[in-house]
Length: 212
Image 1 (spheres, one colour):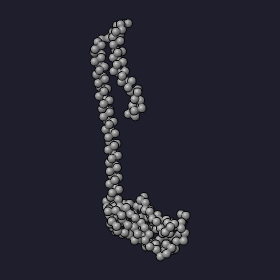
Image 2: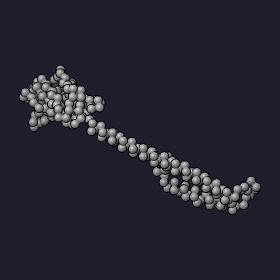
Image 3: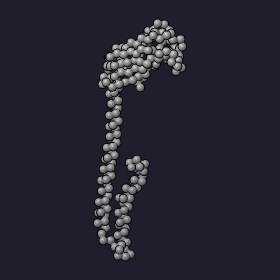
Image 4: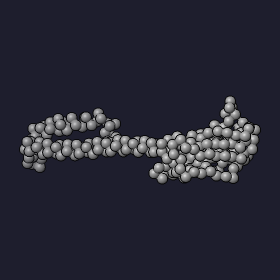
């Protein structure tokens, strides 16, 4: 309804002007015309009819104002809900642990990788697990770890060491993919996919964790 009003503002203005000026003028004219038979003889005076019409307009005005008030409350609720959702999202972001994942050592040619997972926020993470670690070349698994790694807690700047027994990596297109999960300080679970690609300059793996 309100969308229709927005799209037909000119029509609404014409209707309002007609109700205020045209209809009273029509009433005035009708009372000036002599009735052709007794059936059309008015039993009301023009003043009584105009008073009734004024009461109808007053009623309609009250209804319209009430509808506008409800519409404004509806818009206010939408805006409030948006602000509440934004505040909840920001609160969620502040309380969510975030991690940095990096290769810190290897035995040469990226064999026996040592990967560290740091908590880079003040939010403590609990029940951290790193698992399903694979190396892929063009989506084909060429090596898979049979070990998983875990820690009970990771506070700010603490790390989880992931020592792999992988063979030499000879193909620069090799990708390391591993899953990680933890709980935040409210014991809400978080799951991540960590992907590592070889940097062309350093020839070391560069890792990026993504929450899923």
